[in-house]
Amino acid sequence: MSVSAEQIIFYIVAAIAVIGALGVVFSGDIVHAALFLVLALLMTAAVFILLSAEFLGIVQILVYGGAVTILIIFALMLTQARQLRQRLTGGQQPFALIAGLVLAGFLIYMTVQSAWPGSTDRITVVPFERFSNELFSVYNVPFEVVSLVLLAALVGAIVIARSED
Amino acid sequence: MIPLDHVLIFSALLFAIGVYGVLARRNGVLILMSVELMLQAVNVNLIAFAVYLSPERFTGQIFAVFVITVAAAEVALGLAILLRIFTNEHTSNVDEVDLLKW
Image (cartoon, rainbow over all chains, first blue to last red; front, side, top):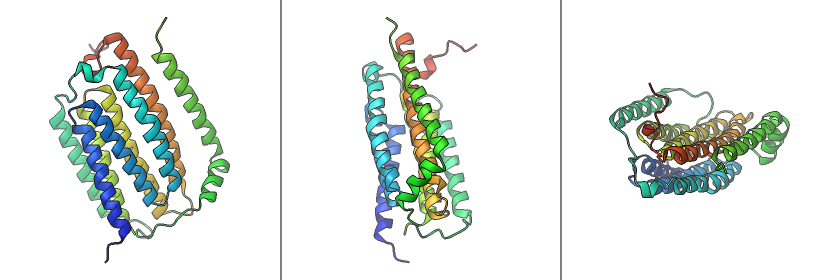
């Protein structure tokens, strides 16, 4: 079975994403961890584009690479994370390591062992018109509700974080 | 084409790394970052299943849009709470925020 170019690109992108994720959880400097998170998020956007979900890839880059990254770095700045140099990893590290490894092993084993119904080799591209049509017709109510959720979250964040003078 | 199993293994690895990050890291912002990693893994999983196994009803892709939205809202709120805690207690370490402990 020949390995296609898409497959090789996917392996490279996935490896960089896993390296980014490992950097988030193992880095000693918190700002480096934030930058590793940006790397992992952008590589996940690349995986979305490889899976032919281009709209979600672009949305991922905009929302996560743009907004969430800035939020996190601003929070690091406002909590003086680099100046205070507090302890980043706690005493639960060995147990957390065991839990993470057991979970990874279990998930990978169940994934490889399962017989998925349908063809697991071909990606069927969904036309974007169908996607947007369904998002605004069939899933209209969740769409409106999630806008309200965003509004409530933003108002709540402002109320919680503002200074009381 | 990319085999479905490989995409699922990638998302499982991402999720497990996120779980380790949530359990081991003590800074609040780092815990939120690890939660973001777990949500990324969930999104990859949803889209992979929608694209490979059920392309006629691509509910997974639409679900992923909502997961992205709610995750962004949750990160904003979580960071606001952490800022408030930092203003009051002058610490970002979640081990030191134990006023409600017995």
